[in-house]
Image 1 (cartoon, rainbow, N blue to C red):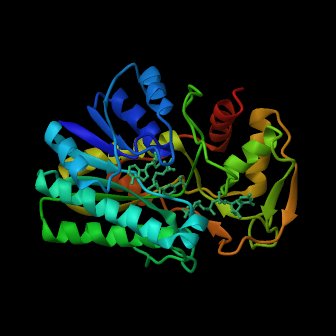
Image 2: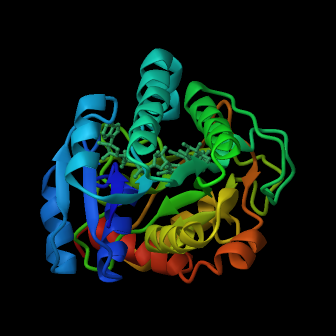
Image 3: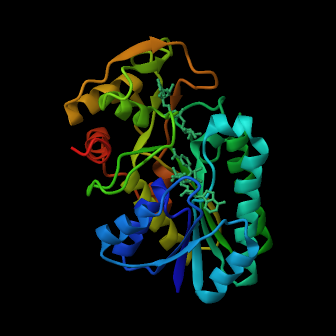
Length: 331
Ligand code: NAD
Ligand code: UFG
């Protein structure tokens, strides 16, 4: 029996595949490389010393999905594949709805046809919208402010519907907070295309001299130092959360929604200082206006992850910065 990992060549998917292979799981990856590259597969083999099945395909290709499920005995799907840039989703809503929602429906149809009844889904803290109080708790109402966020809200509802209609189905909806860091080998990590939207990849490009400064979006929030606060989580901790979710789903039926974060908030300036300490590089910054749509604080209540999955994050901000710097600056 194998675990199908959609989007397994991506940032979070590749780290999860490494952890799964280490645990002795049999893996098949599906990826179309729309936001990743084939060399990641060799890096995964290099780190783990193990091989896995791979299909270069679009998850919306029902015929290809049928082939994958026919050629392999797929017991569970860990579903990372999706487009994830908030700004781009506002410009290209149809592309986002088609890729993320139709893609998920195509995967679910193939699962149904072939009797596969476990899905671990990559949801996001973005489903908490912008008017819930922190810390975010799984039972809070969900909403979104952009098409990307709506795809996560809708897919959560789709999986609730699937579980309601099929009592043997098991879905774990993992709401990720802000993944950063990289594998300790320095061989895999995040590689965003173009100008990064997210804080850590931008910090890296300032540290390596590509940009001369970081724009800090607002210093007048009601936070520890006025800058935005987020719950950064090491990508390897996040990957381990998927192993815990898979083991839960093998023993339980129905839908379960779980936050994956550390429960601790870190401000923009705290992250800048931690990165400078870990890398020995300067990260000059200027205070810029607030970024539209941003909230002051976003961090998780992590008690459910501990209770239900028996999982909690092990790494702190200094570990995240050290591993991120090793990967991105080749230190
Ligand atoms: P990523 O872009 O690095 O990985 C996604 C992978 O999916 C890529 O390798 C891409 O090529 C592949 N893919 C996309 N569309 C596909 C399709 N139609 N068919 C086949 N492959 C396809 O992103 P990531 O950071 O690893 O995120 C993984 C998942 O986690 C995404 O669903 C994302 O929305 C979600 N998520 C990410 C974050 C984050 O900050 N990184 C936060 C919350 C949720
Ligand atoms: N920030 C800056 N300068 C930058 C980039 C970011 O000051 O150049 C600040 C932001 O204002 C925010 C913090 O750094 O206060 C983190 O910003 P990110 O863009 O890294 O992360 P967000 O929390 O805003 O967004 C991320 C993902 C979204 C997801 C959301 C909730 O990018 O896809 O988390 O999970 F929806």
